[in-house]
Image 1 (spheres, rainbow, N blue to C red):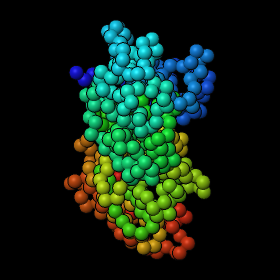
Image 2: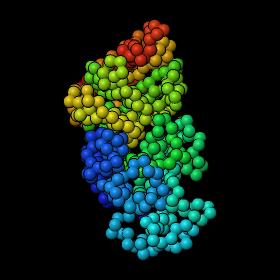
Image 3: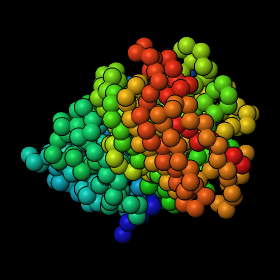
Image 4: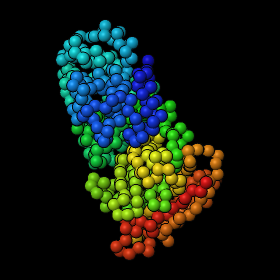
Length: 433
């Protein structure tokens, strides 16, 4: 019989969702922080989450050891704690199966969890009959184990299917791990490290805490995150499809003031910095100001052109934002310039330079303003096209909630592109409501 995750984990997850955690912004820790895990660390919230849930405990000296590499015996013990409530562990403790693996005897902290893993099929040993409890866990092994856990121990959907080959090192994923890595990428458990999967790289304790929080968020959700069940002040959600030609083009959702903005969408960039050169990615553009250096760019994963993705951008009252692909949070950040401001919501399509073309399709557009979502609310549109070669067609917005931005960039000098002439390279529809 498939189980939901341990009750304690579910309670912590509920509290986490109330505080708005997607990538760590706007959260509060329920436990005292470890001396080696400072509030400035990217893993501060997820480490405390894992500790509060009783999944990954600290050492006897009070430290957490965020950079310590996780071993197989430790990893399966974490999953055992997640799956089996304390009042149900006695039955497992009385049924240790000796001889399952040549290198696992009774009495070790991982002995009972290994028996549990073998019985449930969550984690298996090696062909030589050993388990390797002290072997280091690789990222592709962690993905595979979590995929088996989701299939065997939860009632969650395991059809998430990312594409490893879209990543520069996707070809190095081991055959045994490919299905698990596809699941982990599709579910947003693994989001890459500077553009790479690093499938055979080792997973440390901080990374594992982060992956586990994403896993619980994904498997415990009642349905995918959407505009009606996600807390925010402003939200724009749509199915987005991008095609085009030339050196660069994008389609994105935008929340902005006259001088600051955050956007999320799909971008192809022939001149992108390695490893994003000639790649299509999901891109966050965080504009703190229009001054030089006031922009921050964050790529959250690879995408495909001529493919439809369901994207969502949410912004909180304090300027914290989250971005979603197909209902799964893939990135977070904050722009304090947006805090307490009335934001405009837009869709935008753009090209880099003269001759670059863009065809951006936005459908099933939904909007939320000032903390209230009304599915039947009537929104108007205002055209802010800034390039004479780009045309934004909003004729189907009232009937189908659809907008198409199409055309080729024209009128720029040879020195101008979307970096230094960003105000005149786009087709833009702003929503009025």
